[in-house]
Image 1 (cartoon, helix red, strand yellow):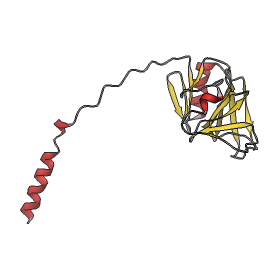
Image 2 (tube, one colour; image 1 turned 90 degrees about the horizontal axis):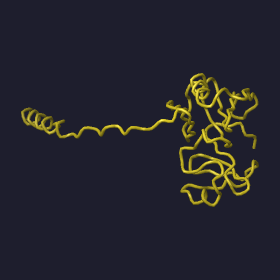
Image 3 (cartoon, helix red, strand yellow; image 1 turned 120 degrees about the vertical axis):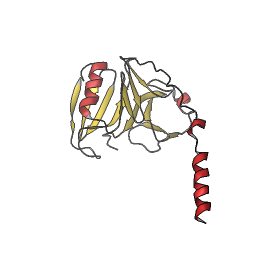
Length: 175
């Protein structure tokens, strides 16, 4: 019986010939715009540097400063429902939120071509266009205005029939 199992093991190993496994494809080169910030549902990209939520505050602020310049406003929000937060606001309507030294959220109100959203919408996109995106849901009874979600994010607000703000991650909104 032992010989049968040994023979089976040898045949099994022989069947695992790695020569039959295709090599992974070559990476596709990505053009990186050093002057562009891309906000994403899971974080942001500043130039060639990508940051997920939980990235270090110092690194995120340094990359954003290289891309957008120094923040116009910084401060703390000790009374947030999610706990005390710090923020930094940059030209182009981008505000990033931090808790305990880590990136936790962003919100964007537009104002410059140096910031884009990673999906097919942006500030100023018509409400009628956003409503056709899979996962769209209007947040009923929002005390903050015409608020919407696209699945698990991003989230945003409409004003005058257009997207006026997009956001992801932790915010200091009082509802």
